[in-house]
Length: 298
View 1 (cartoon, rainbow, N blue to C red):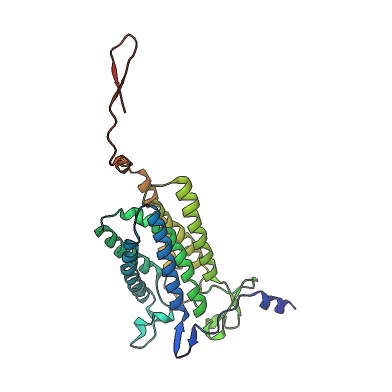
View 2 (cartoon, rainbow, N blue to C red; view 1 turned 90 degrees about the vertical axis):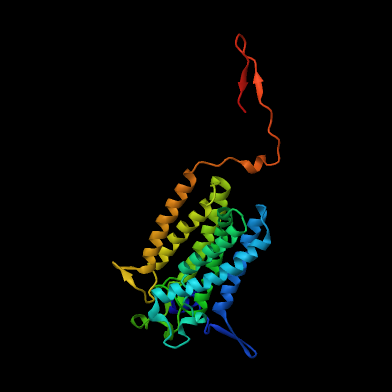
């Protein structure tokens, strides 16, 4: 009876990462990435337009940034997880089988997108703040691709929300285990929660100056990613007993936190935009009894 309840309560995994549509084979991992990119573009665009920007720049940044991001993500994976690359000539290009390092993708995509924005003459840091919550939503949706591929799951667990993994995808040391921590779901939930924190707590209440939201995004994402790395059991290089990406997460937490603090300590620039086109108000004077007339500062 207990086994029946456990199986009914677990999360099933798709039997295949592809869907056949007539003569076409759709790889769900790639389709999930396309959905994540579309969501990020839409959310970032809405936020940018609300601040006086235009959609054309968002589309240009997306085209160049996404292309660079895919290349950067694959290069990062090849550099840090080369043992997982298929031993075929097409192995380095087989992104449909997974293997996109989020660190490389975000770094390359943001760098190239920032260059496009800089050439357009806009405030790059303001655009980065508009992008930050959109990136978190996209990263959360993108983790569904790992569910379709039955990859990057965590340690075995008997919790009701354990993820069912087919024997062929289980590590040999856990071949007799049926359910594992659904780390894709943990990261998805954290990414969505962190996006809400950025918008409803930091942006609307604390109102940090740019690039405070983007810096906080780096720190918050890395907090969740560090916790997930402690659960994962897929092959990974380790340093001092910690997975390589766990160390990268710790560096991201420190870098994002320091960047946020330093960005808020800078002297606030004069609000020239608010005065643009507005004639300067004449200086006013006030009379002080028994003294000369003095000038009242504006």
